[in-house]
Image 1 (cartoon, rainbow, N blue to C red):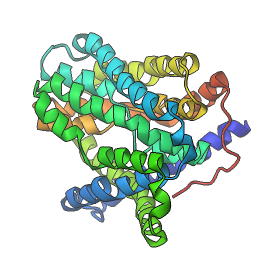
Image 2 (tube, rainbow, N blue to C red; image 1 turned 180 degrees about the horizontal axis):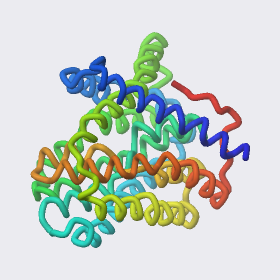
Image 3 (tube, helix red, strand yellow; image 1 turned 120 degrees about the vertical axis):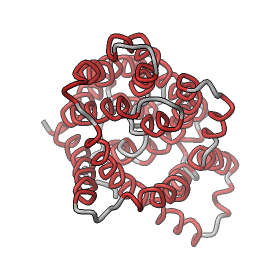
Image 4 (tube, rainbow, N blue to C red; image 1 turned 60 degrees about the vertical axis):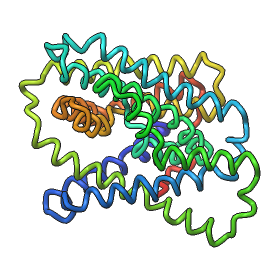
Length: 324
């Protein structure tokens, strides 16, 4: 019972802030006009600062297995999800065109950033967050390469998108951490980076809640029953089982097992909505899958975290405070 309360204490604030973002959009405090500028600040400044502050000087990331293996598992966790979505796409959507391709991508791409980052720190501590950012090097590469290739076939454009600020900041932080250059960075710079990083998650989650308000209005869920229930079965049922099994049997460090468990419990991400708009997919399908799995995840995230931690022999942090 104590473990379930620990998980809920970490999960519920994330959904509360998401709900606040939804309400801020509804009362027009957080307008659509502000989305692009706030997202650019979050993606190009705040999240890179958060990644750098968590990775540089982190002893856990100096272990070789926490540098090369997390991106590999991150890449294949997305790739396998897309492959499973691809096999089910025709049954779920009734076609093999843009809607079907978007369905496959959205099944594969889980929410790998905004929700897992605070959950990882709250449940497992800073070492897990650092490994999470390294893990996400692989997820970003898979999303912008395989995802765009499935939709558009333009691999050159895909790789340019993959080389973005969050990705490059992780690579730079790994170099700084490996060489020990972090000790030569002035304290005032370190403090400024940490302060900016602390803003990343609450702002991003508020934006996610606001955008969900817009996307929800676009969807007709009664006509997409098969899309919704298959996405819930795959993204919140089958894929968590496969990822947790991989964490059990692969030669993972404790921190990487913690990260895989967090990621396994996540719903479909919002990023495929953007990708489908850019490359000729179906934003409505991506929205339906993301919202259906996100709503169900209110119940399934605590369940998978509790069962998965017991199966993997992981212990949650004694602190249940929410690090925002």
